[in-house]
Image: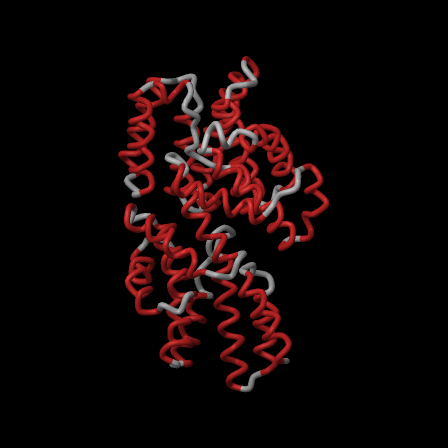
Length: 370
């Protein structure tokens, strides 16, 4: 649910060319602040966003961008209660300011965007915390605004990202999670091919959501299409421009590992282990385990890495599936040792974590071996 709402409704830095961006100083602060944010220069990003708020105190942009900063700086938010409270407050302010503007002028694309994005983040946060009724309530409100963007990609290319994500996930996510299908009658049909086409265009034609387009285009290839190698060229652009971004480093390590490029993944695993976060350190152990299992054939060492990874926590958005990869690895190694019951036990445990197309197929294959 968390990824559904994040991807459907949060296109964080999308701003129409009207109002705010007619101010050259505001445009410069936003661009500079986002570059600082993506590079994890949080102090500098905070200064940029404070300056933006000072210059435009009644505009939602600075509040939404500050919320985005909190989401990355205090990842995952569930481990930071005080920052979570502030994060929600920033989003509420952003929505209220945007809604006031929209009520005055329903044709204001900028206002509709900020309503969409702020509500989308609120929906995603609630879904992440298993508050699904609140999440759906926010999502339904957001969708009313999002439809405006879907109809205006020709006028404003920045809407390609949110429209592409919507078209793809409207089909892919309910297929993967049938339990939410009854809720989807609120939302119009999507088209995966159209969604991919829009996302690809977003990697070329957008300015403010180019990074999101690149990231989620790679993400879709890995998770839903089962072709991680196709995501590598797009992640390359991100990692070259923002080599310190933790999310981009994690994606790079994962795409290279799942594409069988184990040596190339090595430096990024080293980087993950240096990040002061158990979530990234745990992911690195899984990828090291896969290297030893599939590349060096050192099965005992692979098992040790997988077992070590299970001692680290996981979070819903980016490392849940990686936890599943570790469980699948242990299952394969137990099969190799002839421990069929243990192999089946770990394959069954993996079912609670795997959502990647390839991992789901592997989990079903391992269960059939029993």
